[in-house]
Image 1 (tube, helix red, strand yellow):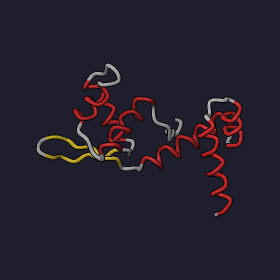
Image 2: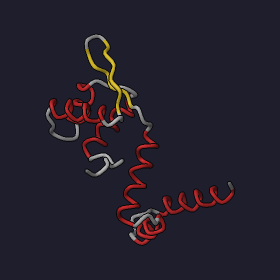
Image 3: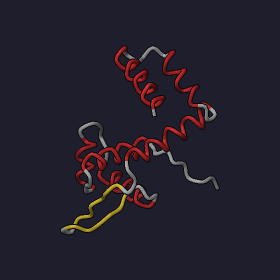
Length: 126
């Protein structure tokens, strides 16, 4: 049996984004937020939030007869783990491969390129 990946599925990530933004949320809150972007069943959201709780991404408390979910892991930690998993799987752990791909892809605007340059300069100063 393979160990669970740190990467969330697209739906799990969409749910986590709603909860991170809200700070805490009920299933109905998440369902209504997701409904604005896609058709999804309430029971699907409920099931996925239970799975996220089991995986340790959400905690659940009872408030006025409703379960309120809160993120257990901060967004930066989860996103960082997902990026690391992606780089490991796609670029064999070499982040320069990802950077080279992004630079060659020409999807970066001049402003984004300047931001990357500034981030690199800031890191060199540290």
